[in-house]
Length: 200
Ligand SMILES: O=c1[nH]c(=O)c2ncn([C@@H]3O[C@H](COP(=O)(O)OP(=O)(O)OP(=O)(O)O)[C@@H](O)[C@H]3O)c2[nH]1
Ligand SMILES: [Mg+2]
Image (cartoon, rainbow, N blue to C red; front, side, top):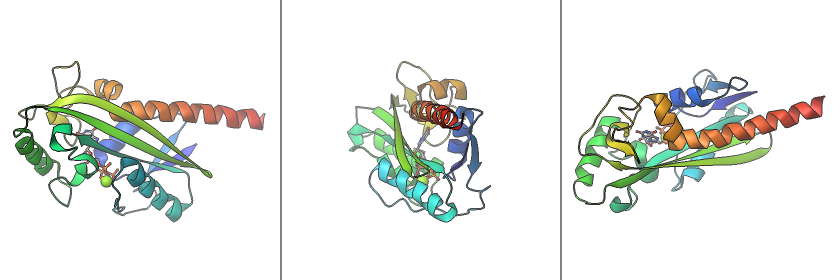
């Protein structure tokens, strides 16, 4: 089975590739010949994920999936939320976003935060969503060079290090994206097994 992944985010693409089982090949937008910033005009992860997948389906007619994610800080009224990639304005810039988050987090005492991930799969004529959440808190200063985005500032619950410090294998077991991908791959395994049963 081949699926196009509707994303331009290199960090996200690396994580998705590390979480996908061998029987599914993932083609990047770039390899599918699509060079576009897909608009994300909506106010929910689900709607923006659908917009990205719809765009690829309309351009290629092929099965595809997308992921929309973000960091939610309840004490900052849910910010940066669906605007996580462009928190400090456009074009997206992780360093500027982290600087803005550091400034804002100093104004509140409750530093709790969570990441959310929503995957949208367009498979033949079906649409499916898979979600994952990861609880944690925001630190006072960036630590580590791993991951991407806000990872140097995010400490997952039960750990003393940021996602920027923890190896990818650990992040994958805890992260919003790892959890959503687990549901996604379980679904695809069942789907492939079902397809085989129809053939034989
Ligand atoms: O440190 C982080 N570790 C993560 O695990 C993570 N997951 C999401 N985020 C933030 O949320 C935005 C997603 O926005 P987003 O879903 O629109 O993606 P994007 O615009 O970066 O790429 P695309 O997939 O849309 O092309 C990202 O840019 C990041 O700022 C993360 N930050
Ligand atoms: Mg985006």
